[in-house]
Image 1 (cartoon, one colour):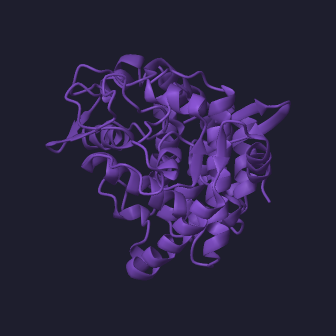
Image 2 (cartoon, rainbow, N blue to C red):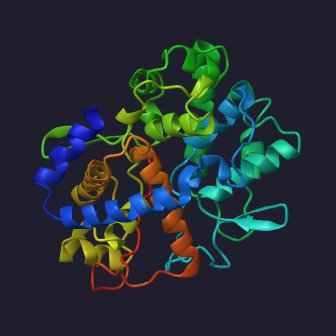
Length: 346
């Protein structure tokens, strides 16, 4: 059991305001097994998404790395109903289409590459002369009035991460991968040691609890893009857990896998800005990891792991967001909004 999973179990056993519902997890597991049988290889296929790279080379590795050092906090201050369609919500226009949320990040990077800006090159974005702050800001120029959240932090992280790759790993994520010897947990240790902004760790009831959303999703997307081969081969890939963000916990509640206390629900329903490392936030994230583990145990199949379950649930959450949320069939209440936490970790 990985450190993240051990800590998630600890949180779930000691949680006050968030609980894992074993019956709900079992029901969702049955449903996911049906989806696995009907969708086959198309189940949670990473490369199916239009903005994800289709080639499998070193340039794609650097694309994945840049995306995952910046993959955090895309919820909107103005879109309080979280529809994804608010006219003022931060958006990137690319090839005649507006993209929001995580997809706005992918669109911005692809748009810059199309314009001849080598934005995925660590040597480029580490260099303030070649790639000044104003250029990075222009890459993330919004098509609407709302700006990209935490721009200054994103620029800082790009500079710091790029310098580490240049100084220690031959200027590429590929150089970092070669040091991990096909071991996901080895890669995570290197990320935590050399890239401080991947250190997604919270203290809960006196215990340091590892969440590691972005470090784990970097491993997962590398594995998924390369379909477990070549650069994407990790012999311990099943040690990776779900990625504790703000979107998948929302759908886990919707599906009846999680239950929230009345106090936590009140905070979410009034769109309260909750501080990172608030105990309720830690409980939500830890219990989400443990809920997906329970789903995985109930599925009990070799062709699925926590990564593919997370990808499937995240895609489903975005699909429901686009269509308009419906009251939960598991819980007789209106939909609970996603948690509003401004953090570089998710």
